[in-house]
Length: 250
Ligand SMILES: [Zn+2]
Image (cartoon, rainbow, N blue to C red; front, side, top):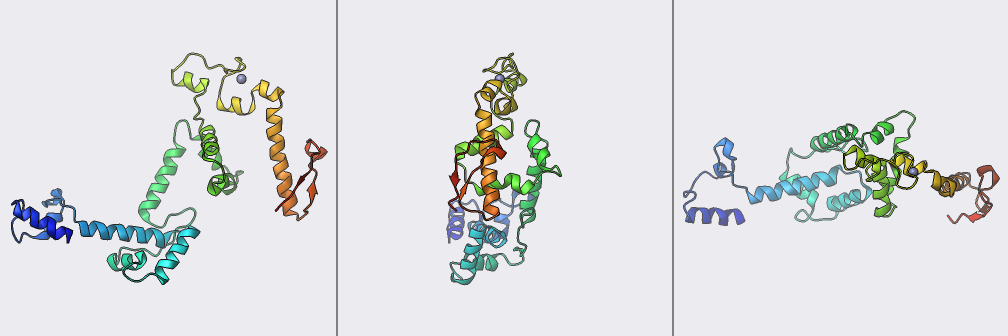
C-alpha cells in the first residue's frame, strides 16, 4: 500500500513514467536500476531475520518464545509462521551451539571478532591465556555468562583484564607522561598487576590477605556444599583463617 502510494507520487512528479517496470525501480544503481527501497520487501526481510534468530537460538528464554510462536500464535501473528511463509528457501534449520552460531554471517562475525581480540595489541593477553590447555575456559567465563555482578563491578574487572585502566605505566607508554612510577609507593612501575596484587603497602595492611581469605572461604563453602555436609562450617586453621563460623543457607 505504502509502495503503491510512493509510486503514484513519483509518477505525479514525473520522476518515473506510468507503467514503468517496477523491478527496475528497486534494483540498485550499479545494475542500472533506480535504487528505490521497497518497503514491503524490507518488512518481510526483517520478519525473516527475526524468525531465523528465534529458530536458531539456544537461549532458554528464546526457546520458550519459539515454542509459543510455533504452537500458539495464529498464522497472521506468529513471527515463525510469517517468516516461513515469506522466506521460503531462505531459512535454515541449523541450531546454534555455544561455539557456533547458526547462520554463516553470524559465524563469520563471531570468528573475526575473536581473531581481532586475540591480535589486539593491549588486550591480547587474556584471550591468549584463555586458550591455554591448563585453563578451564567455560569456568573462567562463567561469571560473565551468569551476569550476577553489578555493572560497575563487571566493567572494572573487564577493564583490569584488558589492562585498560589509566595507570602511570599506560600513560608513559602512550606518551602522556614521563613518570611510570606507582602513585602510592613511588618505587615500582604502576601497572594493573602491581595495583591488584603486588603493592607492598596494601599487602602490609592485609588487603590482599583479606581477599585471598575471601576466595578460600568461598571455595571451602562450595566444597562443603558439594560433599553434602550442611550445618555450621568452620573454615579454620587449615585455611589459615579466623574461626568465625558461617552457616550454609542453601
Ligand atoms: Zn606501588
